[in-house]
Length: 421
Image 1 (cartoon, one colour):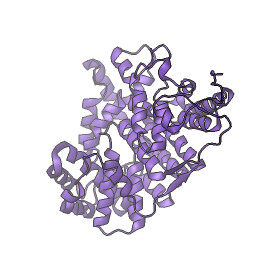
Image 2 (spheres, one colour; image 1 turned 30 degrees about the vertical axis):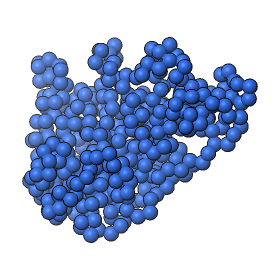
Image 3 (cartoon, helix red, strand yellow; image 1 turned 90 degrees about the horizontal axis):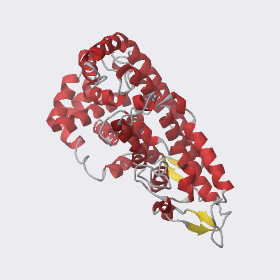
Image 4 (tube, one colour; image 1 turned 60 degrees about the vertical axis):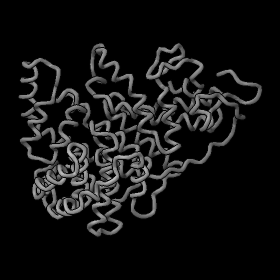
C-alpha cells in the first residue's frame, strides 16, 4: 500500500492529476458522474485513425466539416447530414483490423497507407504503382523486387479481404457507440466507388450510399487541398468525377470549393467539427462513456493479434490494484478508464515494429518511445479525455528516470501513475 497522510490516502483529483500532484481525500468517496458528447469521443478516435493510416493529423475532422458543408449545399435533410457527419468521423475506425496483415505484405503499413491516400480514388494502375514504390522501403533492391512481385499477385484479393474486414469492424464499433442503422450500413461501403471498381462488393452508382459518396469527395478534397491548394482540389475532384466520384456530388464541390474549404487550418478546427454535428448532440453517460472508452482500447489492441483484450485486462487490474492500495472510488474509476485507453497511441507505430522478432534498431526504438505522447495527443480534448490521456501518457515512465517519453522520476509520478505502469 502507498504511504498515507494522517487522514485519507494519496489520490488524484482531475485538476491535481494534471500537475502530477498527490492530494489527500478521504477514502470511500463516490466517483463523479461521467458525461461526454459522442462526437467528442468519436473525434478522438478520428485523430487516432489519422495516425493509424498515416494521414495529416485532423484530416478526419476536416473531412467531416467539408462533408457536412457539402451536404448543406445540396440541401440534404438533417438525417442525411448526420449520417455524413458520423461516416466521415468513423470511416477508418477499422484500419487496425488489418494492420498486422498489411505490415506482413508491405513492411511499414503506415507509410504505404500515407502514400496511397492521394491516389486511392484514382486509377488502379496509379494505386498499385504507388504501393510498389513505397513498400519495404530501406530493404535491398533484390529483396524488394521479390516482395513487390509477390505482393502484386496478392493485391486484388488482399484489398477485397482487407476492405471487408475493415468495414465489418467499423460497423461493429458504430453499433457499440449507439449509432443508427443507416450509419452502420453506410460504413460497410466506404471503399466502394461510383464506377463499381471499389471493394469489397463492387457496388456501383447509387448503390453506394449517399453519405459515403459525399464523404469520399470531402476526404479527397482535403488531401488535395493540403498538397496543392484549392485549385488542385478542384482539378482532381473534377478529373475523378464519374469514375470514383458521383458526378453530381463532385460538381457541387467544384462549384463551391473555396467556401467548403475555408477556415479549416486554424486552431478552432476541433470546435468547428463539434459545431458541425447536425441536430441535437448525442450524449454518452456513465456506462456508455465506459463503453466508448472500451471502443478506443479495442481499436488500439487490434493493431497486433497478441494484444487483443490487453487494454481491458489492464483496466481491470489497475482498478483492482487501486482499491487494494486504499485509493478511493473516484481514483479507482479513473484508473479503470485510463487503463482502457492507455495504448491508443500505439496505432501511430507500424505493426512491423511491434511484430519484429528481434531487437529494435535505434530508429525503431525512438518511434516506440513516442507512442505514449501520441496517446496524450489523441486524448487532448475534452477535459475528461485529457485527464485520462495524461495519466496514460506516463505508463512507461520509471521511478529512476529511465522511462519514456519524458524521463520522469519518482517525484513526478503519482500512485495512480505507478499503478498504470
